[in-house]
Image 1 (cartoon, rainbow, N blue to C red):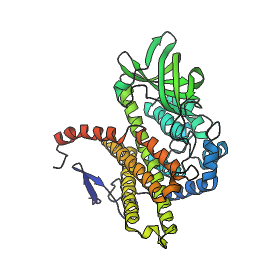
Image 2 (image 1 turned 180 degrees about the horizontal axis):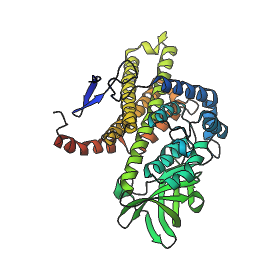
Image 3 (image 1 turned 90 degrees about the horizontal axis):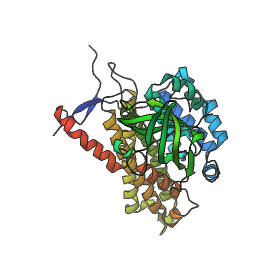
Image 4 (image 1 turned 135 degrees about the vertical axis):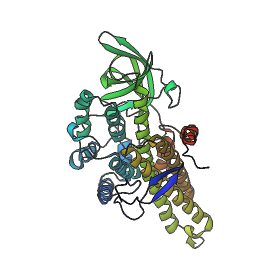
Length: 407
């Protein structure tokens, strides 16, 4: 009989872990540990972004009209295959797992990558794959995999929030399909999207719809983070194709948002790691009173607290990514945990990085402010830490009722 591998206990459940290697023991799925292939993938992406997405490149791209480096996007899609990494082979992708995609997103978070990768690959492609609409997947996913198509997901409206009740955009049935009326706010890459998956309200619940980007009115929003563009999208009896009906619409959307939260958590880990390294490097080289400022106890404490936050965030994000890949029954709980922990960690580290840098950290010329803006905008995207803590709190009675919560 196979010997079970080591595990840890969270909320009364035994979760598989491995401290020293990435192999599984006794057939047990290992959570939170990267394989040698994933480490090599991370190194490849990091090298590419160091060469092609430097701070100068970042500033040039974020100030451009389109907000994307098309040559870099072409290299990522065609030469490395990043856009199609998690897309099934039958739709033109590589067919890797969600964890592999999160490996890539960590590195993109370090570089504050501009462009519609997240909206197209995580949100749009993720929505189509969760909807399991074969015709839609055949039509749109090959273009996403090659980088030729830009897609996105439109959820939020005037009633800020990520609950089912916050979705009020109206969907009406007509003889030739559906018509959508209303608007969506904070749509990632909404101005440049060729196609959108839109959450709208049917008489008996929330449905998901495919909408041609050329049939809607898009207005760029003034946002805090210049590296991630958002738009308000107006629908005026706009033709739409039903992707998922009201019977499963909210359940599918909830799974898409859980995946998006964990993907963003991976990005946040990469950003938090980068600002930690930035702070430690500055503290080691900046001298005051004849000694490095890193030798002062107050600065040491800040750097130590940042390290603890980064390590906790990394563990939470990678654990949740593995849970989603394994279709774990508690993946929604782990997604909420990861997003809450990683949002707080990134914002804390980005803030402390500015403090350690002193006056220069507040200037436009220094990259610290760019990481701070990404951290604060990501903190509220797909739900704030408070929102996700409330999700976890609602799960407590359920876990307790199943005898899985340890007192």
